[in-house]
Image 1 (cartoon, rainbow, N blue to C red):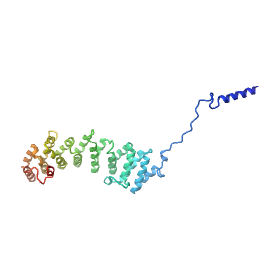
Image 2: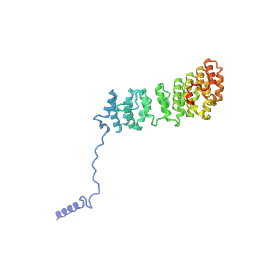
Image 3: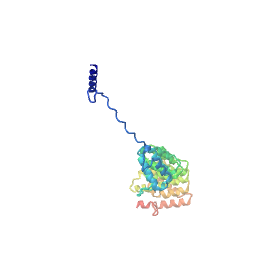
Length: 342
């Protein structure tokens, strides 16, 4: 009898706890473990790891091979190697002078272009490496980094420091970057730093770059005009050279009777000198150049006309001769500005 009851209980248990029955357990079955994710160190490009391609990039001198390596590095950049890829692209550029960077190479084997594509692939993550390159010791890498950061959100103070750099190529590229960013907040103040630098060569370079990029901006002109009173003759001459192009472009407005915007530029104010101060410069070289530059403006500025009459009594014979000729014929046929008037 007991044996029969045990057997009956066993049968009931099997029915109640069978899969899908009302008495079965509500616990969900354990899910299979996912396959382990692929580590970045396992990735390969043409059967080579990132480290192998980086080594090829930095040790292989043939441009075609370096371009191939940069293409591989670019592929790794999207797979967790962004920082290392940017650093590798910048590192190889140490061997290439900025003047040798072609704008376009239809063969596609230019190292600079390939390195730039790596930086573009990495995106914002490349900024720290590029900023380190700006502060590094290799000129080629600094110029490459400046070029790559030109279109990006580059900290103005970093570029400003480079406008004071001892190398002229770096200064020129940095000034170009700042001019691209003008009139963003803080850029105008940054441009004033090289104009006030103790090195006259840096001041001269800044003059030509600032005026060369924007000749019609009054704020920039007010920034440059005080250089007409610089302590160095070379800087004052550079200021006149830079402002010559401004005068040539603004002269036609005089003959459309639009003289008002030129008053400050020609005559100046208490705060900012005008071009007329160059006619009273202590250097005869500057005064003679000023006579040549300002001759076409004699009919349109009483201050210039008066200063030109004073120049006819200048102690330097060349200045006297030039001023006398200017008063007789304010727009001589051999003047470079004659073509504008005609």
